[in-house]
Length: 240
Figure 1 (tube, rainbow, N blue to C red):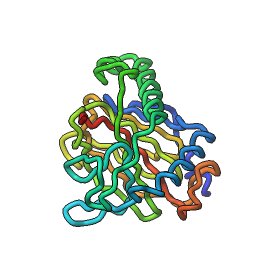
Figure 2 (cartoon, rainbow, N blue to C red):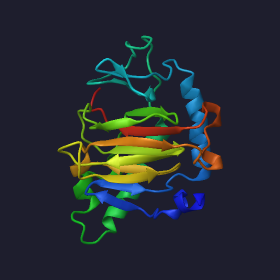
Figure 3 (cartoon, helix red, strand yellow):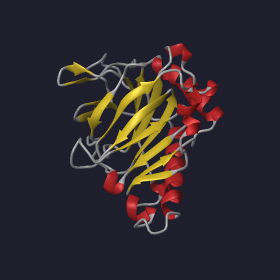
Figure 4 (cartoon, rainbow, N blue to C red):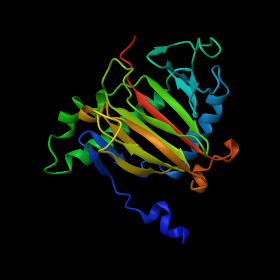
């Protein structure tokens, strides 16, 4: 019975979820997933540890690490004054290259979709090689963590957001730019999946409804964390 609900039982081809929003299932291979998970252990060591960011005085259920910039609602800083006043780790060069590769993959999906509107150059507004993300928010979700519907709008640069999933599968909800309510699309983001949203979808509401425990493949297991999911989102702050 469980096989009926396994990730491979669902359609996992690349998909344009909305104009400017592209899902790339299995973008990261097993070796790449294991390697990035190993990097997470290094990021955990600080200087700024994983922490629950507070929104309106209430801590989020995810644990966040910032690379390049420290995020808290409404602002980016180089130093985590609300945690331990330490400077964050730099944004890795390899991650910038990976972000461009993901955006190029999404570009090819858009360009190959005849009749779906403008090509990727028209959607993103620039060539993927000109993508310069400078911050990554690395969120760890345990089996009970969620994230409510929200917009990523603290950046001054509206370049696309590139998202990577590792570990257990989550139920991801991608909505519209006007309201937290319908219309929206629910997707099962599994370990290795990439998701891009930019252009007309850049400020769409989105969130994580649930984590499906013990669904990670062997190469994506987070046993050292007690299971769960790691999500990396790359953005361009537009700050110096």
